Amino acid sequence: MRFFRDRREAGRQLAARLTQFADEGPVILALPRGGVPVAYEIALALGAPLDVIVVRKLGVPFQPELGMGAVGEDDTTVLNEEVVRLAGVRPDELATVEATERANVAARARRFRGDRAAVPLAGKTAIVVDDGIATGGTARAALQVARARGATRVVLAVPVAPLESVDDLRGCADVVICLETPTPFFGVGQWYQDFSQVPDDEVLRLLAVAAPSGARSTPMGADRDCPDDERDDEIEVQVGTTSLGGHLTVPSESQALVLFAHGSGSSRHSPRNQFVSRSLNRAGIATVLFDLLSPGEELDRRNVFDVELLGERLLATTSWAHAEVPSLPIGYFGASTGAAAALWAAAVPGSIVGAVVSRGGRPDLAGPRLSAVRAPTLLIVGGDDDAVVELNRHAAHQLRCEHDLAVVPGATHLFEEAGALETVASLAQDWFIAHLGPARRGTA
Image (cartoon, rainbow, N blue to C red; front, side, top):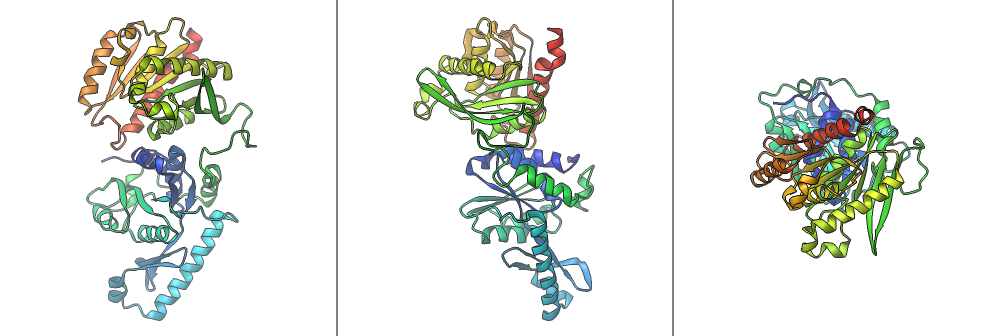
């Protein structure tokens, strides 16, 4: 059973389980206050807009800690008729409590949103997030509010909850993702090292940073309140007659630049690579996510396995990146067939790449060029991805550079298991900092 250091860490672990929804353009809805730090990390990782969803518990009049239901925005009410009956709550008492809590809902919504309108949910996937669940009454109300506002798919994502609450909520959500369901369950806070109250000011700050338009959706050339050396730009790289779309992110005071080589025909929108990219950005590493193939080229599956073509595209983008951000040492992060392209490019004589990380890679496709790679190389594979594990072990024997093979226990090829992708991001971050960071450059 895991313990979460704090809500932000819990959010990062949850985000690794939610990458499957990134391509649906979801809206992340946080239950304030405790759900906001968790949801912030998910919105950041998925590049999704973040909003609050405000609901209030209806407490039995003479025993307020006992919930008899909840109310939310859009006049949504969820009642536990059995509790109401057993507690003997009269209709007038219920109406009084409901009116009070509806006023609280309206006030809290104004507090957290200000003059900003709620993010539209019509036709969207809504991911409702909290820091944990006890009975599930508040979460149930939030799910119903999301549906009432037009969400076509509703997902509930929480770090920890009792199993019976999770099972009960599956009837309200299309998907329920919960990292831990401990037995016995005494309370949400026992599973956090730091479960201190989240101040309203922190909620407002995180909502302002994420912004309703999405954590990374600032248009190219827009006026942003950030240091002069910070960038977050849509890019185009011209390779011959082909234009490759991409995204350049340069955090303030970056110490290195990593280019992502996607595999199996995936693009810069790969949710897994975006997750790793954001992790690197938080560590002060700039990233370039770009398409190795044009939309038309992707239709021909032969191009996906044309390692020479992919490697040449990566080299061309490396030259562009080196000219665009000349002060930063360069690394490659490759996945699947993209890992073969990264190793192919790193083996070119005079290569300026200083480190390579492969996730679930096919280094075997780089063939005899493996022995020519000089950049320190980390091969990351899932422990349950048997065939790829063997391919990477064989490739490791052919490498003549500094290298390591990291096996993530229990992970399969796409690293969809709880905590697996977070482990990948942590391993990659450590490898790049060790081999591209200031200490390494100072000894060069």
